[in-house]
Image (cartoon, rainbow, N blue to C red; front, side):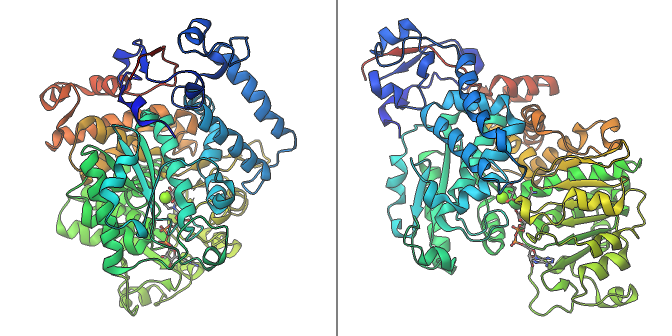
Length: 606
Ligand SMILES: NC(=O)c1ccc[n+]([C@@H]2O[C@H](COP(=O)([O-])OP(=O)(O)OC[C@H]3O[C@@H](n4cnc5c(N)ncnc54)[C@H](O)[C@@H]3O)[C@@H](O)[C@H]2O)c1
Ligand SMILES: O=C(O)C[C@H](O)C(=O)O
Ligand SMILES: [Mg+2]
């Protein structure tokens, strides 16, 4: 990793206004070539080679950044000769390795490649391949990236946090590895998901890569295979629980906010049991959010509103939609709460609107339909438990199967966040044929690919081309054979979390309010044109992620200003922020996004 003393420089600038200033470095020669933050490889000009004692350490041909990328891509593309489709393809991991090695050598070039080819490489550095990477992390680990805090570090975290070389950190993504995508407890290997999320923070939100920090809190694992594997890199003991667990997370939060009071912490892939509790514990004191609960909720709301518009109906018809949700974990409950609130707002925003919105949802978990009869019902799911009488009037009962529920309810939307691949079986999809909607929607949102509740082929082939389809992991559009194409939307929280983080950073809001999250979701919903939604396109393509992120960030800042939460960022204080109109806000965001361009390097003694 990088030497701390080089990081005093700040001019690899976060604002483009400073973009042409040189970057001062306090190292030379091989030390520069081995530092991914400053290395330019063959792109060092001859004058820079002289200035930095690099002459003779590189082959003589000076390459342009474009030529560098061409050479790299030629190597990477060689893998495509035998490439098949699908995340289990060994080529996916091979591509990840090649990209990861580039990340280790030359960060600027890595992000240049990633941003220019985001549609192609997001599925490698992020979902679904990142799942495979986490599963194999103990074998894949070469150079460290990020920080590890373990149960064995109790009492030490406040000083440990100063081991990180960067003076300033804007974004932390932290996981405890307890529920990585739909793959369960992967222990310390879950660090891969924090790295993948932060890659999107850099690529989509233009957060400076020197200011991101992936964190793994290793409190043990309950994965028996990992506990027995002598090559496993994490603590080989069962997970801490109860107060002991909370104490570790508390200590971590205190440490990082002491060193970097303005940092934003994104909680990622914590098992539901802790996801809600930690969110409630920290959200009013720290700048933090839970991506699986809150990011997913916003993305789902945007998609659900898109599905209403795709029926040729106005968004305010949303409260009439009947929605069956399979999965009542952190993601499912997050979506249910947000959807209910959105409906209630549209119905008048009062107590009775909130109450009546609840009857639009049917929730099915591993034990079937949740009703008030469920013994030991999870308090988070309780508000969505169907009343027993009401259920029996519909021919349903506690524990009714998903297929029974779909058959009886005839929903407009079937949404899966169950982590069970194939849950939307032929029988379930056949039952959805009875939907009373003119255009039923299927959201198979579980990740990675093999955990999707169904594939788009299965949905379109059974339900016909008139449906709306979205999945959490990317799938290709389906050729329906009649000249029509079944569009596969990617309903993934990647369309929101980068903008939520960037908007929070640039507003200087002390917390992340429900209003800011709602503004982000509404911005994503409004991003799609009427023409697009009528064609079944309810989410943008990944190639537009940098643009959508900019808009989302501007919407988040606007809401923070309106709620009087914005305290400003750098020279843009709260008063200046308030003077900006909507266009100015987008420009402000744009001007503060980092781009992967090599700065001129100048050596100075430390
Ligand atoms: N697309 C996205 O942006 C996105 C965001 C967050 C989570 N996810 C995915 O959602 C999935 C769930 O995440 P989570 O944090 O809520 O997990 P979780 O483990 O907390 O919850 C899973 C839920 O599914 C239920 N379930 C299990 N088997 C079922 C079955 N046969 N029928 C119906 N329900 C069943 C469980 O009872 C539980 O309520 C994961 O695969 C994750 O990758 C996707
Ligand atoms: O990581 C993703 O792709 C989405 C989501 O955060 C998940 O946990 O599945
Ligand atoms: Mg997640």
